[in-house]
Image 1 (cartoon, rainbow, N blue to C red):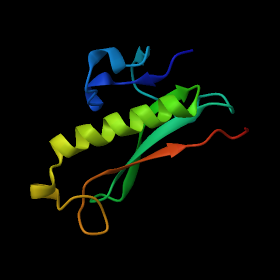
Image 2 (image 1 turned 135 degrees about the vertical axis):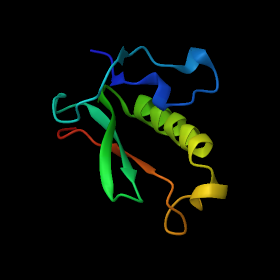
Image 3 (image 1 turned 180 degrees about the vertical axis):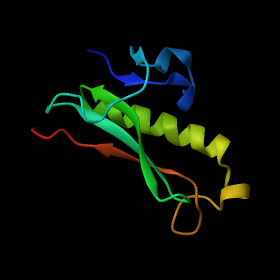
Image 4 (image 1 turned 30 degrees about the vertical axis):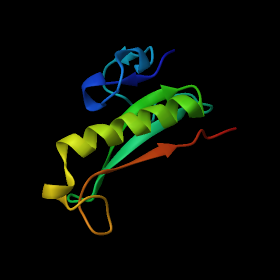
Length: 101
């Protein structure tokens, strides 16, 4: 199964970089034990939220993390968010490792 995410939540520098995926809401609790996930953390609200699930490998997870961070740099620019924590409140992104390797 390809990863599940909303393409509009990411900024890819080239449309060819967009991984084959299912357009939809990710469920980080419904993927296989050997799959990666991607979560965001709203620094201001103090809440985490799913960004992508059902990711089969680390390179894809890293590419998605980079594309999400590029999106955040546009939607939560340093000038209004103060940048990434600890100095600012821009959302952060982290990769969730598989339960089994």
